[in-house]
Structure formats: structure tokens, C-alpha cells
Length: 406
Ligand SMILES: CC(C)(COP(=O)(O)OP(=O)(O)OC[C@H]1O[C@@H](n2cnc3c(N)ncnc32)[C@H](O)[C@@H]1OP(=O)(O)O)[C@@H](O)C(=O)NCCC(=O)NCCSC(=O)CCS(=O)O
Ligand SMILES: Cc1cc2nc3c(=O)[nH]c(=O)nc-3n(C[C@H](O)[C@H](O)[C@H](O)COP(=O)(O)OP(=O)(O)OC[C@H]3O[C@@H](n4cnc5c(N)ncnc54)[C@H](O)[C@@H]3O)c2cc1C
Image (cartoon, rainbow, N blue to C red; front, side, top):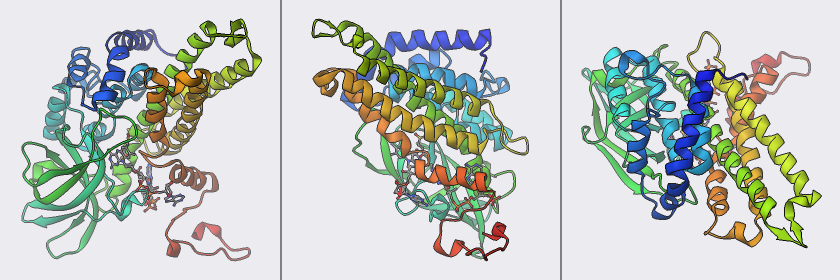
């Protein structure tokens, strides 16, 4: 995909930022496991927070493709910073910008432009891949909703201010209306509590946590009504989430790009048998495969970022987003592992960056929809069938019956 001169300049600016501050901070953030507020301040100053927010709310009206260009550069050096850029431009903030009221957009923009990375709260202990099986409930009481439930593995728990919470909505008579989105600001909302921080394998400066909602009261101005109402609310909300799937796939791809860059430098300087190890064809062919997979990932992610879903959606096409995330996340794990291999024992050392990259990159076939679940989405599109995963969702096809009944 041809990039404009503005986009090339943006990418260059992001690369300079990454090569400066992030080269140094990547390892430090991993070791300290502390959220990098200094990086947030620098991202804010460089206007990498809230790029996709429309100009009328103080943003730059940038595209998801612009964001992808920046994320790749950040992820080459520091995964945590790249994930901040994802959530400051995609996911929850882009959902509010598409579906929110004017006041909600203004408030969300104000928070993100001031340095907040919003949190998106979907997953529950008993509802991971089966996200629509969530139990968190929002009960209507007069003109308000009262939320009760629990979410876990929420990125930014304890540091994010703006939360977009998915919950099952019930009217005052107890009738279920569907799934809706609810906005809460940590520090202002009573009844929103972080109950646990997860101990993670990688992505260490970014807290992942469990959140508990105890009679969390949502005033009418904080209800994010999906465009087709609560009844199809989940479909609308998960449609908006396609932006973050592209972002997460790009973080994986950026880590892989950084690892490949390290590997290329290393094989040209490390000597064995009296010659640089890059002269061995065994490693040359590995490098060729790594570069090929990286190029394919980048092309798929750019195409997905620039696409629009059916019906003039403001968000990337669901199938392209899923394909790009599956391919990029799996390729990235392989590329990073192969780069680590080229470093020999040093690849396994905490004094070199490959070990950290291998821990960080492992997440991306899990978070944001697992590679298995996303394959089901793609298969459903390929076959033109609905593929419900519950046991009673299946109707066995008659020998020559209409399979569309599935
Ligand atoms: C969607 C699933 C939860 C499967 O649930 P169901 O089988 O109950 O639902 P479906 O019938 O498949 O879908 C319901 C409805 O939504 C539409 N839909 C589904 N997916 C999409 C999509 N990606 N884009 C647009 N629309 C979508 C679907 O067509 C149906 O609409 P109709 O009723 O037919 O009109 C499951 O597949 C799933 O996605 N699970 C993964 C959950 C997930 O991604 N969680 C992410 C949590 S946040 C996170 O992990 C952050 C990590 S990070 O970014 O670092
Ligand atoms: C670092 C990290 C950050 C995260 N951030 C967030 C966040 O900010 N917000 C949020 O809401 N969530 C977040 N998540 C949660 C993430 O979205 C879930 O982990 C993911 O959706 C999978 O759910 P699960 O962990 O419950 O696994 P499960 O759904 O229990 O899956 C377990 C295994 O079974 C497989 N499986 C399940 N169903 C099927 C099926 N139908 N077909 C084939 N295989 C299947 C899965 O692919 C997986 O391999 C994060 C997770 C991680 C690791």
C-alpha cells in the first residue's frame, strides 16, 4: 500500500521517538514492571495520544492506518509503549468517537489528550472467548443503571481512567434487553475497584488486572448506546473492537520487526569458524523466511487498517482484521524465536533484548480474540454459514438440505 508523504513523515517521526527514548526505556520498564508515566508524557507532547480523535475535539482526525504506522515503530523498541498508543487511538476511544454523544466524545477526548489510555472491559473469569456469555449486569433504576460483576485481564487496570464496560442490560421489570457499553472514570465513579494485579509472563510495565463493579452507578450521560440499540449492542460494540484487533496485530508485527533488525545486525558481526555467522546459508534462509513473513504481515495489517466493514462501518472489515491478526501474531512468535536462536546463549540472556521480546510477543495469539476463535470468524465468512460454538447452536445438515440453517 502506497503511503502518502505525510504518512512517511509521521512514520519517520515515530521512528525517531522510538530510537531515542524507547530504546533505553524498553528494558527498564520490563524490569521495574512500572507503568511508564514518563513515556506517556513524551507521547502526549509528540501528539501520539488521541491521533484518531476528530479535530473538533482537539485531535488530529488521523486514520487507523496512521496509527498502525506509529505502533510498529514503537513496538520495535518497547511493547508497553506501543500498547499505550493502541489504546489511546483505537479500541474504547474509537468506540466513543463513533457511537458517543457530543458530550461523551468531548469528555473522552479530554482524558486521552491529557494522557489517559482507556481500558476496555469485556473479559470475565467465565466469559473469555465466549465474550457474549458475560454475566456483568446493568440494571435500570429510574434513569440510571447499576452495574454489578467482575472483569479480569483488563489492560491498564489501576492506571487507566476512562473505562468502557460491556454489560448485560436489564430493565426495571428484570427483562433482558441485550448488551450495552457503559463509561466510568476511575477516581470519579464509586463502586469500581481493582481487586488483583495479574503476574504476567511479559508486557511487564502494563498492569493487567481484575476489576470488580459493586453497585457502580452509571448516570444517563455515561451510557454508550450502540447505534442499533441494546438488542444488537454486542454486535455493534465488537464491530468497533475490530480497530483494536488491527492494533494488537501491529504490536506483534512491530516486535518482530525489531527482533529481525537485531538479528541482522548480529549475524553480520558475530564470528564463528573465522567468518560472520551471516555467511552461513542455514541462517540466510531463516532470515529470508523471517523477512517474507514480516512483509506479508505488514501488508495484511495495512490493508485491514485501511478497510471499512460492511454498511459504511467506521471500523475495519472484521474478516480482514481477523486474518491480519491471526497471521501477524503467529508469524511474529516464529520470527522472534528465530531471531533469539541466532543470538545463541545470548538470546536466552536477560542482558539482551530478545528474551524480553519473546515473552512479550507470546501474548498476541491470546489477547484480543484468540487465533482459534478468529479462525472461526474467518471460516464463517468463507463458508457463508453462521458457526455458533455452543453445542445446541448446531443443526446437523440434512443430506442435501439447506446448510444456511446452521
Ligand atoms: C463474537 C464472539 C464473542 C462469539 O460470540 P457468539 O457466538 O455469541 O456471537 P456471534 O453470533 O458470532 O456474533 C454475535 C453478533 O456479532 C457479530 N460479530 C461477531 N464478531 C464480530 C466482529 N469481529 N465484527 C463485527 N461483528 C461481529 C456477528 O456477526 C453477530 O451479528 P449478527 O447477530 O449475526 O448480526 C467470539 O467470536 C469472539 O469474538 N470472542 C473473542 C472476544 C474478544 O475478542 N475479546 C477481546 C477482549 S479485549 C482484549 O483482549 C484486549 C487485548 S489487547 O488488545 O491487547
Ligand atoms: C495480556 C492480556 C491482555 C488482555 N487485555 C484485555 C483487556 O484489556 N480487556 C479484556 O476484556 N480482555 C483482555 N484480555 C483477555 C483476552 O481477551 C482473553 O484472554 C481471550 O479472549 C481468551 O479468553 P480466555 O483467556 O478466557 O481463554 P478461553 O476462552 O478459556 O480459551 C482457552 C483456549 O480454548 C480455545 N477456545 C475457546 N473457545 C474455542 C472455540 N470455540 N474453538 C476453538 N478454540 C476455542 C482458545 O483459543 C484458547 O486456546 C487480555 C488477555 C491478555 C493475555
